[in-house]
Image 1 (cartoon, rainbow, N blue to C red):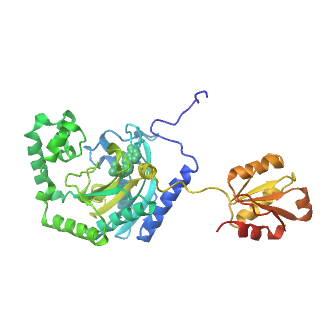
Image 2: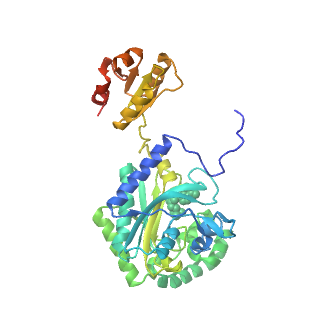
Image 3: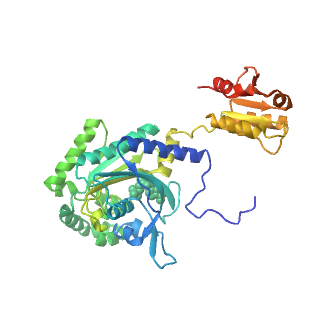
Length: 420
Ligand code: AMP
């Protein structure tokens, strides 16, 4: 086939049905779980003033390297959102909501990343955030929301990695300890990590580069630098998870890709994915972010799950298959009149899913299409039926006989034939 004139940009994809039906089902299940947990949906712009995201911390790759930013025609410096949390905080700062404000969202995010399987430049997330409460039980509830959602998908190979990054006041002592540790072993550190060390020693812990592994494993732990309050909050989260029977792995060196986290941080990894791209979701507390974005000093906590990657994990685990999009009825009409149109409309209004052939195809061609569609029932209208104001109803998937019924009984007859 000749190469098309245009192709989707690197790192973006076209998705078709039934893949798109599966994506919609994913989001609908998430919406149901979030609604059950008292969250309302928030719909946010896909682009913001670049400052909304640069406040997230210049030391993270998401901000320093991966932002899709540009000047618009009004010379505003704009960026496509690389994630939702900053926009949620900006929206809260701008339009105060009753607290605790519990919001869920779904939609695309954009990062200028190196495209590969499980890593795209446009990808989709669902997520949930709570602004306005310090209660660590909310951290637990959010984690539970994600875990129960994975359970509903049938994805059982997800590991919850759990850490606390302490409070802002705990940070300088820990950063000093980290800096001392890495600086005294500078030769063993990778070139890039040496640069990261200067801007943010915490981020060195996030390095996946092999030479750094040994030093990271021996690095000081935040748990030795926690305030009593932060330690008690973390203890409350772990006992909450224990009480709900939610398993977790303590990961004292887990730092997330963005710099705004305080206290509880967590990541979900899937055992079905390659280690380099096995994070299917993550989140944590960000107690200073709303005020950093010009809002009131309200704490926040939330998570985001990547749809693309979670579905790859579902594929690998053989769960959460594409939904069945086969129609209930195929209409075969050979009268040349408007019967096909009218019958399809009537059956759809009666609650059935219906499709049919177009272009005045022959009876044989239309029956072939009906069989190929997988629909369990065909409704047939030829000249005889049209004259007698009847239709023929033919089961297609078993050997039950075709019946001729008055048009007025069509819907009821089909409903009886359909598998419940
Ligand atoms: P993060 O805020 O980076 O932890 O992202 C949350 C989740 O979004 C990750 O766990 C991934 O599942 C997903 N994600 C992040 N970046 C990408 C990407 N470039 N392509 C696909 N999914 C991504």
